[in-house]
Length: 175
View 1: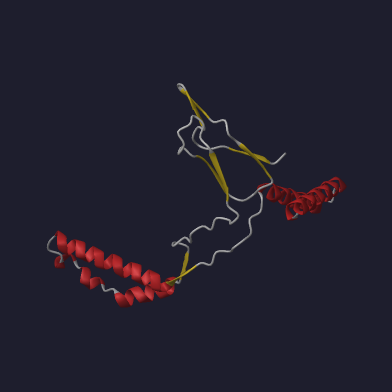
View 2 (view 1 turned 60 degrees about the vertical axis):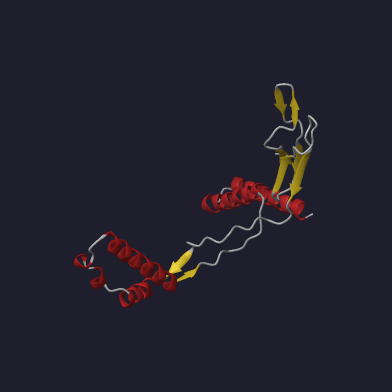
């Protein structure tokens, strides 16, 4: 409701005789960027300073190397051209080294063929939207759907109120 976030370090900030307490906290309101808070134990006093670091850049997730779209028809054709099952006949394998080599060759051929027949999926880059805004949007859409399903004027009133609340919250964030 108040949209307050209490930030505190993961380690204690004051060390007494047989005790350790966290006495330094930060109250954060309407701030949606990542932050870190740490207790710095570089000083020799019983009370450690606290370092609160706000990051004004949103964290960018590393791309998922497995997020690919594979053309399986092309994969099948490339695999048939690059790999012959006659090379893997059991009578050609005489010891464990031969077996390991054949497994390695087969695995490399499949991986290489897959990489040639695949392309990465582009990730949709979106701006960060606060959780309470997402909830208001979901509620507004739900009420609009209920009104269209039932044509009950009460749902129209609820929808209009939710839309008004949603617009007010958007204006607060844009300031």
